Amino acid sequence: QVQVVESGGGLVQAGDSLRLSCTASVSGNTYRVTAMGWYRQAPGKQRELVASISTEGATIYGNSVQGRFILSRNGAEPKTYLQMNNLRREDTAVYYCGVAGPQMEYDYWGQGTQVTVSS
Image 1 (cartoon, rainbow, N blue to C red):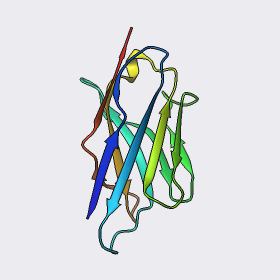
Image 2: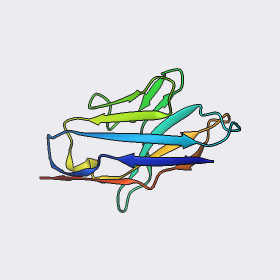
Image 3: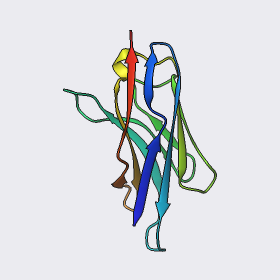
């Protein structure tokens, strides 16, 4: 019912910036998106919250990215943009975009986009 696509990952050096985008295509009228979020997972580490944003614009950031990343949304459309600044090697991970429904659970996920930070 919901197709999620992320893009924007790549290989950068420490201190550089990247902008990730996420688009959720909702088919039918049975699913109400309440929030979209970004999670990441690095090898050997647990999946962790990067940032989330509700349809009302409320945002939550993970402690490790607070002050460096900014999550925004495109009006009422199911699109988000994650601006990542001052990237560090520990930011290296696969970043996944998720879509939450009425129960505030992430029901749909994208395929992930790789972010690799060198130095």
